[in-house]
Length: 215
View (cartoon, helix red, strand yellow):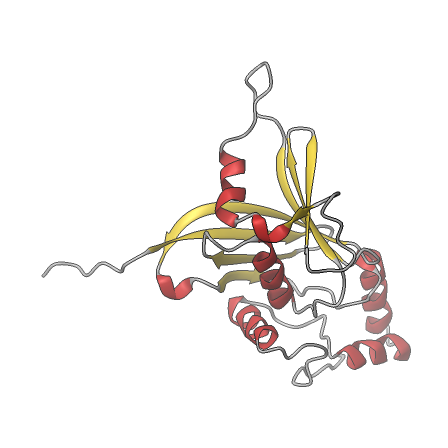
C-alpha cells in the first residue's frame, strides 16, 4: 500500500536564544511574516507583556541596520528602518547570500533582538528556511528555560532576585508572587505555545493561573 505523504508548506524556523541565560525558543512562522510578527512571537513564548520598546539589529559585514516599530511615536524613520518591511524570508536570504569582502570571505552576519532598553534583554536569532506541515505554522516547536519576568533588572538583577527568594527573603518571594512568575517552572513547547496563545488573546500581565511556591 503506498505511503501517504503529508503536504508541507514553506516556513521560516527562527531560533531565539537569550544572552546570558539558558533560555531559547524555536518558532515556525510563514516566510511572509515580518520582524514585527517575530517580535510578537518572542513576546508570547517568553511570557513577556509587550510593555517596553524593542528593536532588531541586523549586522551585514561591519554595518548594523536597525529596525523598529514604525507605529511607535518615538520611532524616527530617518534614523531606523520599519520592521514591518523586512520579511523573514528576506532576512533569511541575507544570511545565505552574504556580502563578501575583497578576499571573497563571508563578512559578519547576525540578527539581534533587544527588548526593554532598561533591563536590556538581548536575544540572538538564527533563521532557516524549512518545509513543514501547514498546521505547525505559528507554533513553538522547542522551548527550554524559564524566561525572566518583566522589570526584573536585566540578567544580573533577575539572578539576584532568584537567589534572594531561594534564601527565603520575603520581599523577593513576594515580588515573584506579585508578578505570578515561577522561576522554577517546567518549560517545554506546550507551555510556550500556551503562553503564546494567551498573549494572542490579549491576556497580558501577571498570569493568575501560575502557582508560585518555594520549597
